[in-house]
Image 1 (spheres, rainbow, N blue to C red):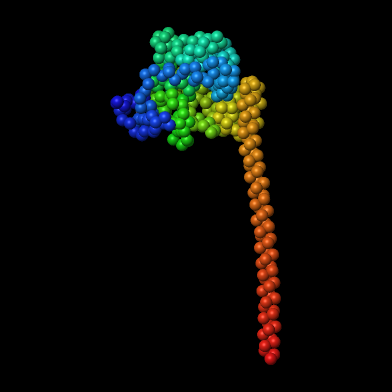
Image 2 (image 1 turned 90 degrees about the vertical axis):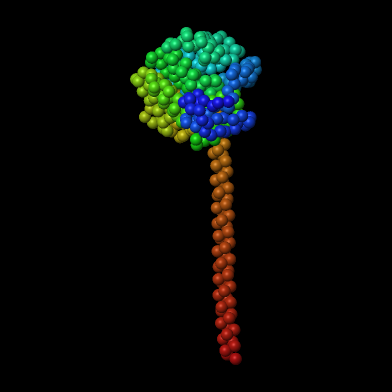
Length: 372
Ligand SMILES: [Zn+2]
């Protein structure tokens, strides 16, 4: 089989990694974009009903999906609502319509979903399902240039043409439209085990270098993005693209606000996005962010948000408790060290006394022997 990079069309493989299932991931020598060695022609087989753990509507599974979707998609929801409370929005890989349905505003909601059962749930919730696949001709023929927003969260790694999926998405945007996306990232600095030891349905393995090369393939659009480090999990790449310079600058500013180390100086909407991303999604909690939480709760209160914050509180409490135990143990060791020091001082003192007594006795002996 001949290798040809999907992003830059280079023909040489640089490095190779092997997944936990024994299959190889090949990285382009030129741009370092990764791809599975043999691309499956039909990837839909991966998305049978068990993919969502929930499609048979087992109550537990269903609530688990809703809960996970709630905290991993909250930043997207808040960002969309902040950019505009109205518009035509397409969610690629919309699952049961969770993100679209969560939006507060007068949006026209469209979805693409490969799993028929999930798509049916989305439809019942008022989402217009336009296709099961982003490459369905219905998408490029009918929706060209028609969306204000397109979201693609954790979907482009599953398709068999990564660059093509970006191409269709960008073409489906209106002139002032915005594409927001998230894909798994093969990090240069963090552990990639979640991508190499599970998620075997993935086809593409993007790197920062690969993504930056991809962006250059679409010179009419401006892109920005960053490596997203979720505590205890492998990285993802979160990015945005827009053609209109003013729209891009507004969205890029929101991205900056989202990743700012402290919420100080941000507007309420920006604070909520910052907390939804850093606290609720990525588990990167700081004292400043905890103090700002009421701003987020005011804007996006829900049972699932409270449940997520409870998880965070608990995780921090566990760390604090083990730190407390560590402190107690350190104090015990310090006391032990003090006890040893005291014991040593006493021994030293006794020894010195003994030496002095010896010396005195020696003197007496000498005096006695001299006297003889
Ligand atoms: Zn390449």
